[in-house]
Image (cartoon, rainbow, N blue to C red; front, side):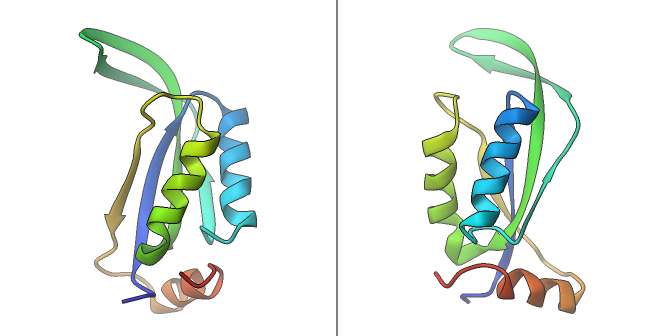
Length: 108
């Protein structure tokens, strides 16, 4: 369904990068809202080594139909070689909020 809501999680290296990406996604109506969470520590394996870095998390509310365009928009602005961009389905929510997500994002 065109209005099926999803949450997209994106990790970024800094608040500045996060704000730039978040603003672009909302300005381009690829997301109705993006939350930028405070710094967190990420521990992950990359190119054979365990890494530990400070990152921030973006939580984007959008529609499933817009996920491919959102991913492309993030990739073009993101400094990582392989950024984390994952979409999760919403199984339930306050219907007026879900309607707002649909109304504030562009047609697919």
